[in-house]
Image 1: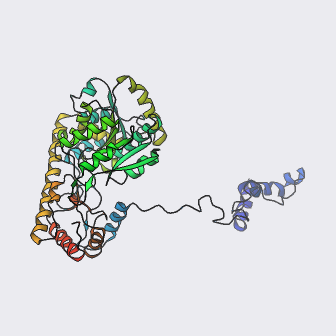
Image 2 (image 1 turned 30 degrees about the vertical axis):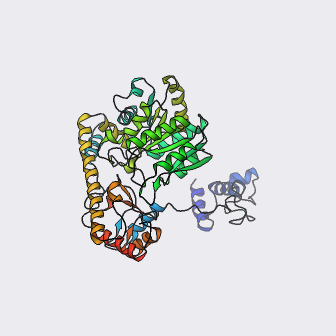
Image 3 (image 1 turned 90 degrees about the vertical axis):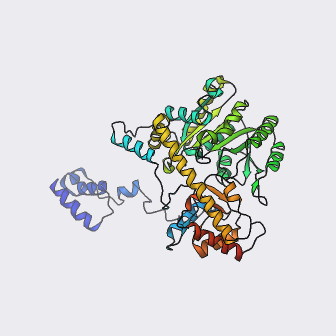
Length: 473
């Protein structure tokens, strides 16, 4: 063995690429035992026989006949590209009005005190766990989230014809629900609002929906809901079409139907046998009242309509990166639920297998403790009040400046976003000249405004509107 060790050391000096089996075989050949056995030195290294093209086949050239040579680049996700540009901007006056995340008066992310308290209890106690959850997640979460949406006195819950499953955020709930509708209900066509949250454009086609249509929503001249256009488009929809509806604080317009308008929408959907798929991302933030914000879903359930609803706790609990979501499903017959649940399990298994535990544990604690719920409601009020105050501040500043156009819609809208009516040219001017970042559609995240920057933003908008006049303002 000493002789082999010496030879190994010497061999490494002149042939670093030799494998261990090559070196051992050469040593065996060259020592006395090898000579007695009649072994001859190899002409080919064993490593060459085992890994003949370790450094690449001589006939293969990079880029030749790649299966992916014709793949074109996908368009960038505008909101995240803008967010990145904002963070790279060195200007001391830059303002971020992009991603829908709450900011406090100092422009900082706000961890809700109730969330911080519960998280500290979880991480400091003996119940901290990183074990897998089941495919359908925490039952205590989905049960409480479903009750939060439908109401504790919901007829659907009392009759056992509604249930929920934990998902990877609201987007995960949309995807799971969409895939279930395609695979099990054989639905192929969906309608989304014009305009709508951009991810709706991706989630439903990727889940297997073959036909994508839009229904009118925003009246650009009047800056309000185009209810007649909406109803007309739904009346023309083929039976069995899925209609995506925002429960409250419509993204991006901030305009919600009134109760009377929701009733008319339900009438048409029932007559045309359309299937409602609600997206609930802002419960408690729109009005500051969890019960009030959930009214549209509860009304549809009271009408006997079957529906799905994707819930997110990213905004109303500030658990953005924890991906806490819930898919609520309501049916006419409780006997279909076991079969539906089994298929939902398979859809989840084929997508992400298990939802995350940490944020779900925080939400579960809050939703199942009356004292914590009361604290949470107060903090939601704080968020809602600040948003409303900044809406009035921006509108007042623009009117004081005499900015051309009617800006009353800023305070008629609700929730995080203001659909400003600014043109793409005006938005680009704001970004380039004032370092104020917002999407080209003119959607403003009101949470990005505060007492320190609202006047600066108003003056910049005034300049943009005067520099690039538009009849749509």
